[in-house]
Amino acid sequence: MSPDILINEAKPNLTLADAFFSQEQAQALRNKLGAGRFSNQQTQVKKAKRLELPKEFCFKFIEEHPLKQSNEFHLWKTTLLKELSILAQYYKENPITSIFFGGGTPSYIPIKDMEDILFFIIGHFSVLENCEISLEANPDSISNIKAVAYKKMGFNRISLGVQSLNNKYLQMLGRPHSAHDAQKAYHSLRSAGFANISLDFIWAVPEQRLKTWLDDLKNAVKLAPEHISAYGLSIEEGSYFDLLNKDGKLKLACEQEQAQMYKTGSAILEEAGYMQYEISNYAKMGYQCRHNLGYWLGSEYLGAGPSAASTVGNIRRTHSADLEKWAVDIAAGFAADIEAQSRNEAYTGISNYTTEHLSKTERICELVMLRLRTVKGLNADEYEALSGKNFFKEHSRLLKLLDKNNLMRIKNGHVFFTRNGMLVSNSILEHFFRNIKENQAKLTAGK
Image 1 (spheres, rainbow, N blue to C red):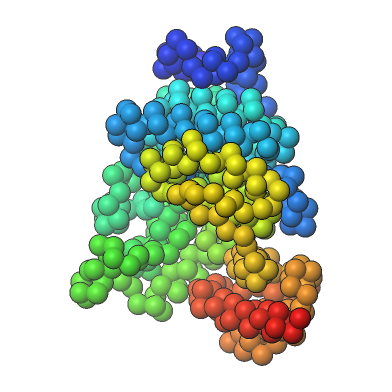
Image 2 (cartoon, one colour; image 1 turned 90 degrees about the vertical axis):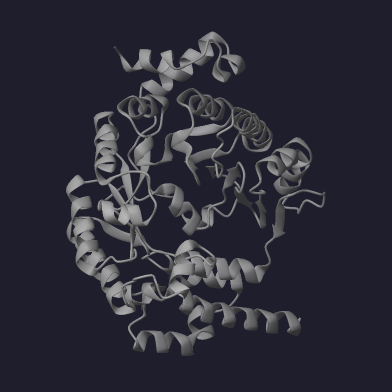
């Protein structure tokens, strides 16, 4: 039985693709996707200075809810499509460079519904043929049939939330899948023809030691994905791990061992051909995540769904995480908000989401924070163009101290963290932010 038949069998008699398009148009879209016109080869991201103008956008879909009830799912889907239709009124001519389904458990969304949403985007926006179309997926949600369906639908990049290939640590993290499930899901995606797969891992898990973490990485390298993300465990205030840690019951590796996990792990990945391009991300040549690079390089982006954020110009909008509140906003004042945002104006109506007009100081701090997350670092010319200040003069004392302690380096007009610096990047950034805020306040007072 062919994959096309399998997909069609999962479809009802009438889908949204059929409702919005004629029979010929709907079939043309299917042919376009099935023919693989979306390249899974990565292209160079535009320079940040070209991304300051609202010409190129990426989408990120947020699904933070279990959506177990059919009425909740119906509300989510219909509201999402309404939100997209409003966005299309203002941004349909802007080339879409990346589409990202993430933030929750999008791989649990039924195939036909995922297809409906993707077809809607392609029919209403200017999606580039080499657009990066990513899906975050849990290993336990991937089957051979689903993998084939995603490929035929048009997805060309999958981010698989493996977290670990050791069952002990998967159980520690409360993950529903096993190491075998993760490997099975990976091979299903490969068999379906995916040539761009990312595996997500977490290190410094309770009871994990340097050797077991490095074994995890070595097993990941054997699978030969194109991209690997490795995040240090973050213990959130009030979480179960936080409570255990405060009671002295959480067995974590000491800071020195955690530092070795990061540095030695990074070295192993680079030896295997995965070049680090951001604090927690490594990729084979040509397979950096274009969507995430857009964030770090300051690209404008549109978000849709509960909890989603959008940044266009100096305006940032963040939706409520509550499904019903988000739905009310989309049904009420969202169109007026988007119209105001298209003019780079803050929406003044009543809503459940937040709309911020980013100040110059906030934009400078974000520029520093986002660029320094990358291995390439911050371009001093870009900093001066935005702030009106010379970065090296403004932060000379701090830079000398960081260089002396092997935490930061300067080369060819760029300032960047060493691997040691990346380990304590948040603390270092706070010092930069303090300097920036003080200096911008002096400039404002002097006017």
